[in-house]
Each structure stands twice: as structure tokens, then as C-alpha cells.
Image 1: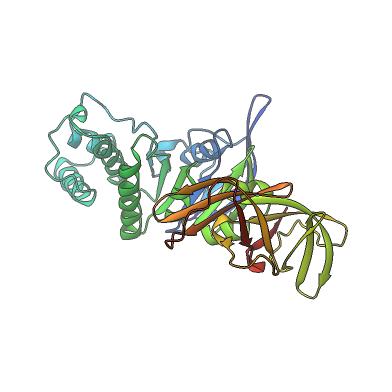
Image 2 (image 1 turned 90 degrees about the horizontal axis):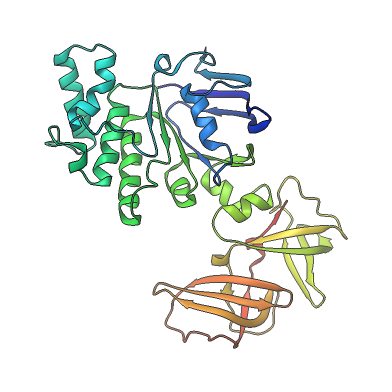
Length: 358
């Protein structure tokens, strides 16, 4: 296994910016995810690691080895593409063995390695089947087996679950993580799906417009986003603008409406934010932290009119109009009657749940 370093890597396509100044270090054995919307540069970055694109500027290193100018077949990476890129005229065995055949591995060793990896991805007994005889999930596992059988230092996965239905995505997500932990292989995963990134990754790199917005653990990315984009892209959040009304020790009071002041903690702040009286700040409040209040008054208790009420079985979701703002809340269903559109509701926003985003 190998670590991966991108040393101030940029990629231009003519006059268009693909990726700008990506500088990260991925530890050996780490599960690292590139996350962002379509066109943000995550697949371009992955393809530079694979060797399909060469950087316009910067270096790429595997461990201490500079691979910036090496072609793909000399990098010892295994890649799973979004469309799997399987050969329809070959059997499952032949598809998996393709990389070994190109490397001129002896037939006996080839057979042993293919059978071993087929067992690993739970495809025993499927060796003679054609690709068109397989389900989407089975095809995905063939693609994964083909990438693993060459025993790569680094496994690269480019949105490998996007063609699967929701239930199969969840099952396959578990299988990929199980394999990664079992093999201890350095894995770089590309997705626009926040649930995949949060549930599978050791660390996540959030990208937008070809630039890195934040790198951190799923917990850090979710609870301490560095800017408004990360806060809104990762999960759901309420973004309210307000004016800093006062600071008392570690407590910050923010006026979010003429007659409404919320209090949060000063340590819950993005590095780019200045908590200075009179300054405009953005409050990020996660819906699951907002709870229905039994009392109409109290610190950080707001009253409003229900705009939307959803009962999902396990949860109750509300969208509430609070002055100039709308507040989304999500709570565990506890058997209480569901508020209806137009009714008044009181909601409590805990101090610790308010994060001052850039």
C-alpha cells in the first residue's frame, strides 16, 4: 500500500480551469473521498492520480516516488469506472483476468489469483457467465474484482454506485468498505452522494469550482464546515443571516430579525468568520438539532407558523416560517399529534447547535 501526495496540482483544459492548486496528503491505507457537485473537478483529480491526465502544474507522488509523468500502466493503480467498462464478449473470469493477462502472469498463478478475488467479492461459481447474464450489482463486483486482482497499491473508484438502485447501493457500499478494511488498501473514492462520503470515508475533500473547499473527517465536515457552501452541500442545514449584537465571554448574541436574538457559542465558528459587534454573520443550524418546545418563552425559543409538515414514520419534519426566515426541523416521532399547515409552533434552538459559517 502507498500514501498519495498531490503537491499544488492544477489542470487546465485550454482556457478552462479544471482543477486549481490541490494540495493534499492521503495516508497509506486510508479511505479518502472526493466529494462535490458535477463539474467541481473531483473526477479530473482522480484521473490525474490514475495517469489519464497529466497536471498542468504540480507533482503527484506515491509514497516518495514521483509519478507525475508516468503512464497509467506503470503506476500500479486499480480503477473502477462509473460505467464499469467491462468487456461484453468475455466471461466473468476473462474480464477479471484481463489485467493479469496483459502483465503476462503465468496461467496457474492467474487462475489462483482470479479465484481468490472472486471469492473475496462473493462471485464464486460465476466465472463462466457472460456479462449480460449478470445483475447491475454483480457487474459492479466484477469491475471491483478486476481492479483488485492486479494487487494495486492504490484503488481508485469513480462514482461506482451511481448506476445501482437505492437498496443495492447501500448493500454494495457496505461491501466496498468491508473489502477496503480487510485488504487495508489505500482507496480514493469519487462521489456526489453525501451519504456515501459520510458513511464510508476516513476523510473527505469537498470541492467546488475546481478548488478544494475543506478537507476533514466526516464529523468535522458536517459539524464544523469552513464556509457556507460546505454547510449547505453536506446534509441539510438552515442558513440564517444576522448581525452580531453582543459578546459576553464565550456567548455570542446575534440579531436575526428585529425582534429576535439568538445566542450561540463563540468557539463554534469557522476560521474565516469575524465575531465582532455590528458584523454580519451566517448561522448554520442543522434541522435535527431543532426540537419542538413545550413553552412559548425562553432562550433561543422561536415561534412561527407551520408551512409544511411531514410524517415519515420514524421522524417528523417541519418547515416553519419564523419572521423573515424559514426553519427546517427534524425530530423523532414520539406519538404526539402532527402540527398542521397554518398552526403555530414553538421550537428550541440549542446554543451548541448554532455554528457561525463563513
